[in-house]
Length: 397
Ligand SMILES: Cc1cc2nc3c(=O)[nH]c(=O)nc-3n(C[C@H](O)[C@H](O)[C@H](O)COP(=O)(O)OP(=O)(O)OC[C@H]3O[C@@H](n4cnc5c(N)ncnc54)[C@H](O)[C@@H]3O)c2cc1C
Image (cartoon, rainbow, N blue to C red; front, side, top):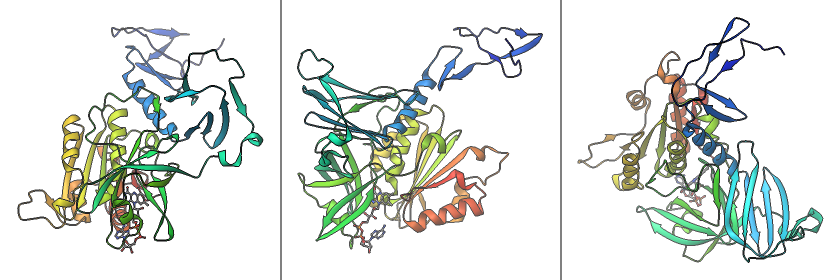
């Protein structure tokens, strides 16, 4: 057997910090503290906290490729675009759990509703030709409005629940399209589901690494009603019990790739541009150990600030997360930063990019009106030197 000593490394798995000198053919083999093996990080001290966080991060991204719907005894699954149908001869219980392992194998578990023996015929895989047309995965799911609460004078928090048993996980920074007939016309606009704040315990993700409850759980949306708006105004005044239609998750933001190796993440949000930032904040706090997050939240008036108390409370829960509010029309008593976003303001807040300094570990997420995001991106990249890959605009791409 031939061993390439330049490529070989050794690791001692032991609780104390033992060193060992291993030589192959007289050449010393480098001893390492951790190793990635088949996608998993193995550490010499046997601690797996980092591994758990990596697994959660991976699974959270993969979940948005999984769709599961149970109607009566018929189960439809869609994984990475591939649809499969099953028929249960006996009733099963919903919700159950769904898990995705390090190799991307997706496991959906159902419990029997009745204690009875199941044989091989109890679950039948259906061929596409056996599946009625109505059973093909829908483009839009029907959800019921279960709550609609005012957050500020022009924004509301809309809570919806899937009408059927549906698992439709929206990943960090992703959005849904809502399709709705308003005043005789079909409108389709994007909205970004938000986690509920404050994020109480970011170290205790529920229900466990790589697992998610398979349930028709609630989805929360923050919507701003524009005075001349159609769908936005309709959504903010919709009654409980009404039905609306939502799509699969959309959006290209992929946090494990985008945020890899980043130490300081700056999220610049204007108004309802806050919405994608909230799921990114939750993701970073749950899946990283040292990454720091700074939300810079731009509004006109103090009363426009959405969820101020809840955002502040989240900063107390995890010291890695800070927030700064910036107002363009502050009252005389406002002690915080004021003014409209400008290149001068950005230079006051962030260092210029320098590839030999820590600024190479900075990352910027931008969301607001079109001009806010495009102009800020231009200032950060052209005037402050940040590479385009380190600045992401949440604009529905
Ligand atoms: C990826 C993505 C995610 C989004 N997420 C959210 C979200 O979480 N919450 C949210 O509230 N919105 C979000 N939006 C914006 C949303 O999709 C709609 O554009 C918005 O709700 C306007 O809908 P409307 O029915 O008022 O539009 P329309 O009926 O077409 O608007 C009519 C009039 O309303 C006014 N108006 C509409 N949009 C704006 C605007 N942006 N600024 C100023 N005036 C406007 C204008 O006067 C316009 O002529 C998102 C957009 C994208 C692309």
